[in-house]
Length: 389
Ligand SMILES: *Cc1c(COP(=O)(O)O)cnc(C)c1O
Picture 1 (spheres, rainbow, N blue to C red):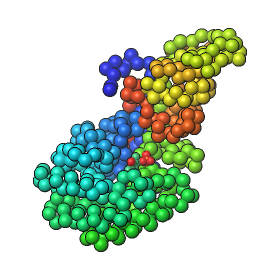
Picture 2 (picture 1 turned 135 degrees about the vertical axis):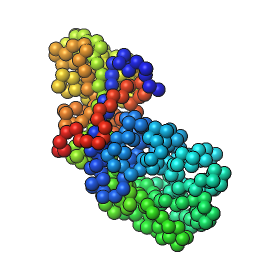
Picture 3 (picture 1 turned 90 degrees about the vertical axis):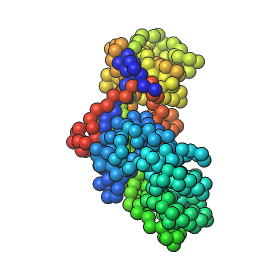
Picture 4 (picture 1 turned 120 degrees about the vertical axis):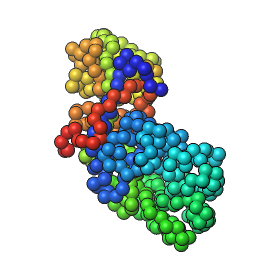
């Protein structure tokens, strides 16, 4: 959903496309590999088309989305040039549409190879395939013990002109915990997978394993291409290990809203549904018109930080569907802005701080900001809008 009357909505998510460009350039120069920019889930809530274009402008080699449906839409949005990888679909999915849209399609199950072969035969289009192997997620991908069979099927398809096997890939389960040792084990299993696939006679061009955390913190996982998502939006894959600011990332999303009511209440006043908070002194309160329908988690009730008039404050009482109450600094009036999160460099709380106090990860904070909140775009991704730190 996009609102036709954005200007009538009293909150906005400002999206800095130059920040996305800078973050992508940072990953590229760190990893020294090809880069696939992940724009699934509406670019983690930032707006798929705009972010995809910014990433391409900043030099991304590929775009990636999870769902086939997203990939088909993305192709319409970015035109025929960018290479697009997609990896999530169910049996019976319209893979022929994917081939006509020149998508590169992951196969992570034997049934997927069969269905893609059928689609290639029907359309007469050679499918560009990325073979996905599970190296330790127990999620997407073919298990090592089925890999020879999968590779054999692909080899037969190549001989028939149905397949061009562009990539071999996998996904890391604990790359955000650099000391835990699992990533090294997954790399070993990925190497085994390579041998199996080589032995089957497949000639694969791109090996890729690392998302954001792998790209930053596991040089051996970088292979030919990295697949960053969250870092491109300026959020750390693990802020307990290194914050976005420590990594040198710039937050792409800044969420703010107008204060639409204010009042000073006496000591002992119960606030919002359930009176889960009560004033312990005369208190200046304001109403912010964003709620859980906009993706402000109800767990943010009473705890999430805000900046108003340059002063840190917090949500008071329960977050409602469309609004919440906050404490206002003395002298703040209706019409001033409440800043929920953005870049730490500007003195704002970060998505990661919101995640800490609500028991989740920064990914979920930005991705959940609802479609009702208008996005306002700045920059292009091409140039840096401020000097690097
Ligand atoms: C979401 C996703 C990514 C990006 O992950 P981040 O942690 O956001 O960088 C990369 N690869 C796959 C397969 C994904 O599903």
